[in-house]
Every structure is written in structure tokens, then in C-alpha cells.
View 1 (cartoon, rainbow, N blue to C red):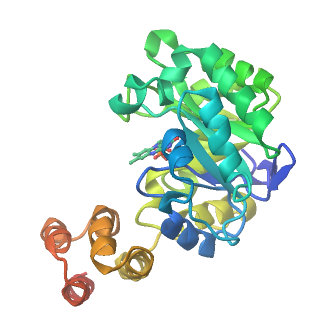
View 2 (cartoon, rainbow, N blue to C red):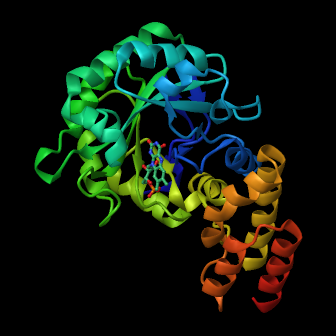
Length: 327
Ligand SMILES: Cc1cc2nc3c(=O)[nH]c(=O)nc-3n(C[C@H](O)[C@H](O)[C@H](O)COP(=O)(O)O)c2cc1C
């Protein structure tokens, strides 16, 4: 693919995204803090919140999980649930904060699919359609959907499903190129997504296993998608989406941050978590991020263990200094 053919903007309904990269939602990860830090690098990408339970939100509209500020725009707020009227109410609550409402139809975890939410909606396309219709009716901003290739290898219905969501009024879709049965195993099959080309008129984002500017380009080539959504690899490299945009738009390959830079990012991320959640909760919440920042180094497992079990802020900084020195 010639890099000059990469679309520099994507129209999602009446919202223009001046980038073809979006941050894929990650529950417990893509919170206000991580999104702010990614936005410092990438001014134009589409940010997405972690999934927000429609039931919980309707019961308690002012919760931490939906916190945002005006620097985040453009931002999609993702809601999760299976009751059209509750999903519509949740979307209405979020409408003022959001550029876009995204509907989760791809989450594979048992607790979610057993409650008829997430990817189980791919087994009930009519209900999925009713949800999109209800949400569309409730809000004046674009509505998008995120789903997988299908429930299992022998029930891949993403093409018909995408067409149905478009018919219901979805303005764009993101497809994780795995089935629910695969969960996160094996490789994302980007070539499957190319089958969407010509079958729908709305833009589609390809998702799964994009870990670098080079894989982003390869994924766009193979999937023929309009854009890409980057999830797990954003952990441990706050600049990844920016580096991808720079490569796709200008052909400039910025090297991935070395350990010293990653530790600088880590410290900023940790400090921001503490400022957002308070010291004790912030430090505990942050434990899940150490493995992504402290990787591929000598004594890495030992350092990670010390960091994860340490609750004292100054001691954490001492361990980080030691990691830097030994790098
Ligand atoms: C810890 C974790 C949390 C996730 N949370 C969400 C979520 O809230 N909503 C959603 O649509 N997908 C969620 N996903 C799926 C990701 O958005 C993405 O589709 C998947 O990880 C594949 O993309 P990646 O290889 O770039 O991470 C989650 C994945 C992980 C690993």
C-alpha cells in the first residue's frame, strides 16, 4: 500500500476524525488517565472509554468511569447491555460528554455473555438492531458498534451483522478479527475483514494484534479497512498511536521508546493515577500496568514483583531508579 493512500480523516456520521486510528476500549485500562496521556501525543485520534454498563450508569449517572474533560474530544463513550430502553437512557446520559456513542457487541467474557450482553448480541442480531435503533432515537450524535467475526468458527456472521447495524443507523463499525470462541487466542485474521469492502457503505475499523506502526500499515493493507483500532499495545507505550499516525501519514518511523523513556512514561502515568484516585487506590490500581512498561529487561520478573507488592510511593520510585540504572 502506498502510504499516501491512507485516509487522513474518517467521517463518522457528522463527526470528522482527523486520523484513521482509534484507541480500542479496554475495561479497567483506557480510563480518563490513560486517555489524557495518549491525547498528549496524538491530538486527533478517536479515543474510546472503557465499556460502561448501561444498568449501572442509569442507576448512578455521575460515576468515575464516565469522567471526561474537553481535551478528550473526539471521544466515543462505549456502553454495554442488552435492554434497548436502558441502553437508550445510558446514551442520553452520556450524550453531552461524548462525540460518539459506541455499543459493545464483542466482549467475550462469561459474565457478560451469560447476561446476554457483549458478543452474545451477535447470536441475536434482531436484538442488536433494536438496541441501535433505540440508541439512535435517543441521541443526536453518531452511534457506532464494535463486534467480532462471529460467535464461533462455524457461525461467522460479521458481514450480515455489519449490514444490519448499518441498516439500523450505525455510522461506523469496529471489528475485532477473532471469534468469541477464540477469546484472545491465535492471531487476528485481518484478511477476513477485507470481505466487508463493498458490502457496507459506512467506514470500518480493523482491530486485533496491531502492535507497531508497521503492523498498523500491514493491517490496513490486508483488511482494506478505513481505519484501525489499537488496544493492548497502547499499554506501556503512550506514544504508540502517535507513532502509528506519523508513519501512516508521513512515512516517518519513530523508534519505540527505550526503557528509560518507558519509565518516564510510567512515572507520569502513576502520578496521574494517584492524582485522580488518591495515593493508596492509585498505587493499587496501577499494579496492572508495570508488566507493560517493565519488559524485555534483565531481572524484569524480579523488578515487576517488587513493584506490584510495594505500596509506598517513595519506595516505588527507588525501585524505578534501580531499574533505570540496571538497564
Ligand atoms: C483487558 C481488556 C479489556 C477489554 N475491554 C473492552 C471493552 O471494555 N470494550 C470492548 O469493546 N472491548 C474490550 N476489549 C477488547 C479490545 O478493545 C480489543 O478488541 C482486543 O483487545 C483486540 O485488540 P488489540 O489486540 O489491539 O488489543 C478488552 C480487551 C482486553 C484485553
